[in-house]
Length: 392
Image 1 (cartoon, rainbow, N blue to C red):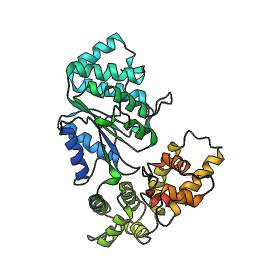
Image 2: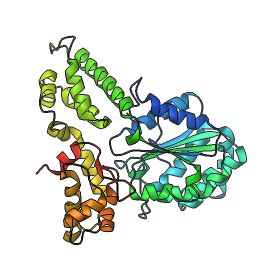
Image 3: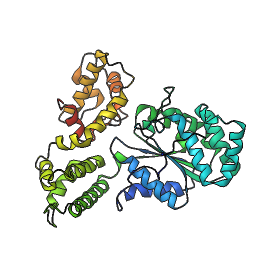
Image 4: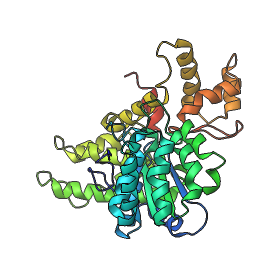
């Protein structure tokens, strides 16, 4: 049966969480896994760069070691087979068959009767490859699907189609739990709002985790990674007290809970072609600037998210993009965060609150957009307005 060979958690070079970090988040996820309540789906919801895949990798490793993980699929837009929705259920079934011999026997009967079932529509795949064998064997297991927002069917079906299918069958396999990560993009949000899925879903929003906990994790991450730089760069006389505590404090303040920022800083400072102390000074000497960090990786992340958010909009639709620039420009340039309603009054003319809301809808992965039009739209990290206002 065709499957994505490198989609599992033991393939590739994905990194898990640094030991001692993300403890609160991992505790909540493990509590969900061991809890016997009716919420059999868990959505780890997080803005771009908040560490969803790293947490998913760690959860996969620990649950596999405990004998609870049955299958995992780590989506990636960089690989054709791992960005294709049609590959998810066949790959999960393949892994479940490898993990559980009774499941394998049931799946073999399905394949003998219909060798091409892995090429059928998602609903049929789910019913025949996952639900049927799971019901017969009554296996109790965990399935992990990471970065669902990076997947799309070749027939242009959105990632939410998988959630729609899941909502139809989740009641039929009560012993199987699904852990799913994804950015809060419109189609993903709408999928988890389905009436049949919502009662079974537990949600954790990474960008709403207690800031003190996240900052503590970021500080430990920076200290550990900088210590590795010291140990690995014998040609540099950095000293045992490098970096200074106040430099770490500056970086933590600049990171503001944004894990990809911390990882990008480490990559920038640890360049083999530069002096680490000089590179660190470039960042800490400009507390209000993120240009160095942006050029080292964050800008690429923002570019990918924006391209994906507006991939279905004609590049020649000048009116749309002019409107978008005005709305997003107002959000990132105002001194204090304003609500959609107030932003509408500020821009006037045709910028009604509903149109403002529509323009911001695809940007939930980058901005904190509230449900209410009375609450302020907020920037999650300063690097995003820096990116948007950079002429390059």
